[in-house]
Amino acid sequence: MSLRIIIAPDSFKGSLSTIEVARAIEIGWRSVRENDEVTLAPQADGGEGTLDAIEAAIPDSVRHNIGLVTGPDARPTVGEWLELPGKVGVVELAQSSGLPLMKSPDALHANSRGLGEVIRAALDAGINSLIVGVGGSASTDGGAGALSALGLQLLDTQDRAIEDGGSALSQIARIDWSHVRTAPGGGVTILTDVRSPLLGPHGSAAIFGPQKGATKTQITILDLALKHFSNLLGGDTEFPGSGAAGGTAYGFATAWGAKIEPGADFIARMHGFPEILQHADLLITGEGSFDEQSLNGKVVGQLLAKASALSLRSAVISGQIKVDTGVWQSALVDIAGSVVAALENPTHWLTLAGAKAAHQLGSQLSK
Image 1 (cartoon, helix red, strand yellow):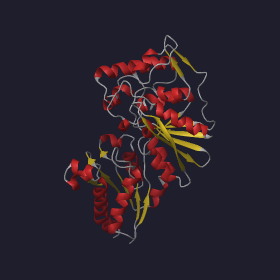
Image 2 (cartoon, one colour):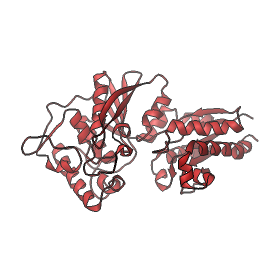
Image 3 (cartoon, one colour):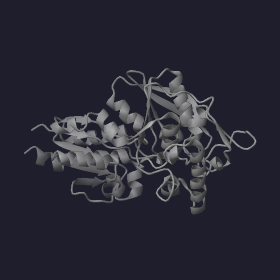
Image 4 (cartoon, helix red, strand yellow):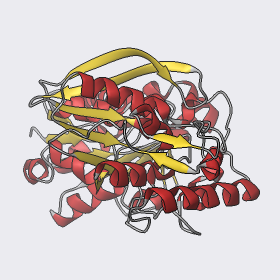
């Protein structure tokens, strides 16, 4: 009996894009069950892979390469944005200002300026509305770098522009709004992968600073700098998700009136979830590391919940698996024998995992 399979993974961050993961699993599945109806629905949560996931969901989308922009450590990097029908622009912070782009971690000085430069190019192209995925940032600058690239002037006591980076926010004496670009008339939506506030023990610096290389002392410096910035900029620092991407979500919500939404649900809807699950026999999802955090608003956890609500059989294929949810699961490190081996050729092991799933689940479901 032919089965209807939905393959909807997140990216394997720093290794494979979401579409590469989905295709590798598909190849493995089809090597065993070539007559099944397999639908690829690569996912993201606003972080790395957001452009790929939305591009896969919208067939008429067009990707624009704008050349070099300012990377998170000031070295140039390539900037891209996606144009959807109706002049909707999509920008991914991780693509231009993400942590993997850093030569080495620099929590105090990393910046989001490249994101603003990409947005500026999209505005110049005449977009009517904007979607910004803000996960995976290298910086904790409240989006100041990006907003500066869009014309916001952050000035010190000598009326000089402050340097880029989160720690420099404490030097702001006044903010000049007179040259800020106008937000697109159709509005701005910020896709976040977390629900953290901007400040305090659960805020941007405290929770996410360590993964960006921040020491305890630097976390205090960054939190105080963000507080000073927010006192001058205004806005709601407590809104869930405002602390996403080093506070970039807060910055755009305040400066441009952007709406903050959970990215995983937003992108899932673009692919037609949960409707397409209603007609499926199996959902296969996964990510680089499947752990407790995956069940807290992340792509895999959200999809598993949707499948469970429909009593749909589901499976998880991930690089590492650290939590058992009771669904069929396969970890690449177990197939490859070690983390090192899995990282050396993840496409190969994903293909084998897809074949394993087809062998073990295909026969059960087709009975």
